[in-house]
Length: 535
Ligand code: NAD
Image 1 (tube, helix red, strand yellow):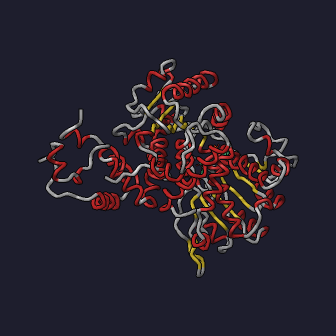
Image 2 (cartoon, protein in one colour):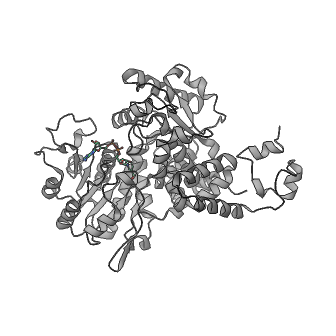
Image 3 (cartoon, rainbow, N blue to C red):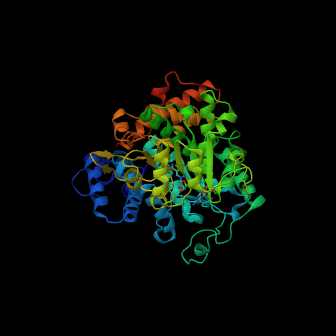
């Protein structure tokens, strides 16, 4: 039965609020329920922006936007799309980190789906409670490593919610296709366990086989209920992130954004930095600070990229070096994890600065969560050994960045190619203003998701991430490069995602991993399936 009256206004997908026309007010039984004036969506959007700007804390802005999403979904997406540059830091990093930390205090209407150890054996049945039967993208976390903030337990649900909003705003994936999931396996964060407002499963984290069995049941339940859905694994601690990815990456349609999404966005940044330096990719030597999932994910994709440029695997591995908390990763380093082994070279251990001097990397990538680890001496040393070093400080949120943009440009006297994980303001050195690029995964995952669902991909091999990185690098204009910016403007996000989706979908068809028939015109097909929030 079609909804009428107040039920229409209460339905966030139907409501247009003050934009209902005079005729609609009559036919939908809305007369008297709304003020007289009729606003266009554009006018409503300006009202939203005015309200956001009036709030002085980012978390209040987040709460306001989240409430708008619950009231009028199309207006929410219209505003996010048209003001993406301003809104992205509110609905995603850095504000989303703060939101997760305060989740149990600011909890309002729910947008997520929660699975706990008590649901073992019933997960498929539980999924029946989700109102949508055709889900195409799931973002799932277990909250064990949220951004660089550690174990936030069930409070980590803010991440899948935020990422899925970006799938819709940036990649045009219909909001009803999106499902944010918290695999709430408990938490080892004592502070949360002691907190009276904590909303999660109030026990220590499930470990070992018990944990693996729930993940397996969850993945299989998704195959049964939503066989076309892409599962994006997000913010799992590194050993579990790798274990899950290795187990499922060629079995089901899934990827890990921290590993593979980050890798593609970093590779795109490296490709563009080399356009500025006019150097060949195969001549680069890359050092990472932090040997966790982000850094090794990048390195794994770099190996594939070097090999496409004609290097052998052995030659490629020799170009990649890692520093972790105990110094350089070498054959004798204790407790090496399996994802680190290929990069543990035959070499004496040494501390970070000495390793830079000894190994002479051309590119330095920070993915350690160690705030301030790129000291003045580190930046100056990179400048001594390179005419124009490339430095990426990828750690999030802003407070965890290895150095700020201002520090990088000041300490190098503007002689550096810099990008960060969190946003930084432009920096002026002498006559020149540098606009630091943000190596944000949002440039990659919505496009990959859109491409994958456009052709109903079977699974996503590494080549998909290489294609996405090259396509992203192609989207950068000379005017961006002139300001030292390695990534395109976020205002072009939908076009970027569209182009990545077309490239990914065509590639999936070529390599036989598309389950849907190849459309006659891929561009038209993808354009047609993209969500448009206009009324
Ligand atoms: P992780 O926990 O898997 O890895 C971090 C690694 O850094 C660990 O191996 C740890 O031992 C090491 N480390 C910590 N302090 C160190 C120090 N002082 N010196 C050297 N090594 C140190 O985490 P991750 O998933 O790899 O993420 C790392 C960071 O990268 C996080 O802050 C995350 O937010 C950020 N990240 C950014 C992007 C992006 O910008 N696109 C994407 C993914 C992750």
